[in-house]
Image 1 (cartoon, rainbow, N blue to C red):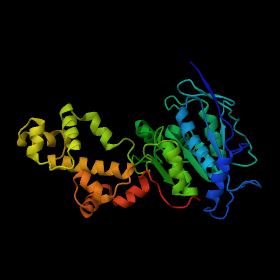
Image 2: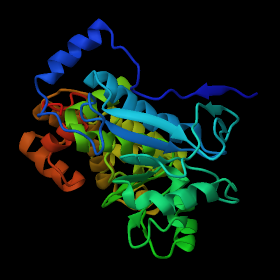
Image 3: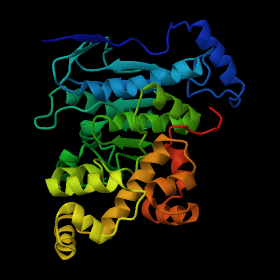
Image 4: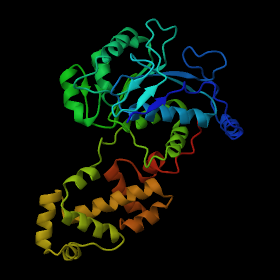
Length: 372
């Protein structure tokens, strides 16, 4: 079954409701003096022109996720800070990977009157690459030097690589294609150290939802942390992730390989975090001797029973910092990590940042910094 989705030119011709207008007035009081984007038209305040380059076979989420982020930013600011357009070699439509058709695309202009401030290249099949990619690659080769910010989502990095944009830069892509990108673009430093990478004016992201995180980072860089967090809340994101987060979490990797016995033991620990959890108690819960449990943990988890308990306590502390407004003292009591100073030391060693800094960055309450 095939559907279609027409993409309007974001931020143009939209009349905000009275509620949005009132919110815009309230936000405007905290704004910096207006800045104009490169080549902004008279009457546009701080407007950036953002072009999404789309080829057949792209994932719709690579396009729709970042588009939604910028659209919500416009709504919250009460003005078109981002003017989005979708362009591609098969304009006016492009059939995405699973049959949904994106409409409203413009052809790539051979001699644009004005280049965009930001270009975002959506991912596309890698093997084989769509023949239409050649037109996008050629267009980028001609014009990329005049575009201040160049972005790829997921396998869009292969298009940037073919255009020579990644040469001499750090970059990433979906974890399934890291080795392929290294082989095709030996001049780039392809890394697996986060869900997105910024190297100068070039941003690259891992797969699919990582494009949302990257675009939130673009919004934060330009308008501040508070606006980016408000957009994340509007999009009902469970957690706004930093670029340093792994492409798939250590918890997910453990869940993939852990045997049922470990899942049961972990569940027991989580249910009793605020209680003493010595090796004898854990062994009894697991139906093993203390020596067998210790050997089992080393063989299957590469950690001792005590290290497993500490890890689970810290993971729960991390969750509580992200999702609640509980005081650090209360989190220490609930997780069995001790008083506030003990939790502070353990968490800082574990996460590389203090509990307060972690909460400010990832907490649901966001930040009180002004929206810019």
